Length: 145
Image 1: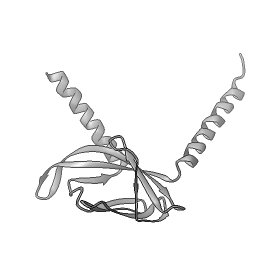
Image 2 (image 1 turned 120 degrees about the vertical axis):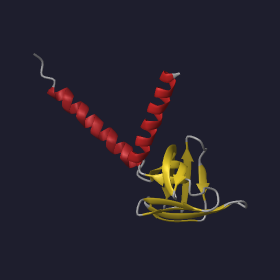
Image 3 (image 1 turned 30 degrees about the horizontal axis):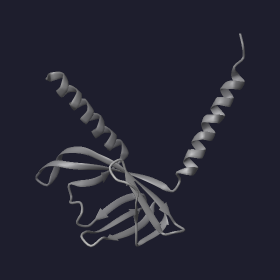
């Protein structure tokens, strides 16, 4: 029987190095997951659906934040004050909407006129749960038809 411990260790070191490289390459990026409130009762959201995941790439040196998602091409947010990837604030006046995008201690917030209270940031696990529930409901609805 051949001893494969050398190749196993080599593979484990490769996976670790790949993970470390990815973490280093994306250290200045942060994902934000969004949900919509489809129905409210007594000002409490009773039906949510997931929206897209947005990425924010932060540049301390240039004091800008670039955002993109599956639905939108990369866009540089201007008028930013950047401390680090988890602490920044940008004001985006574009003539029609004046929004403030911010990350404070890793918590995302957005104020302004573009999005109302029915679209908001949520945690990744809640977003994944809503996504899984939506996929299950879609599957069940197809099976019923």
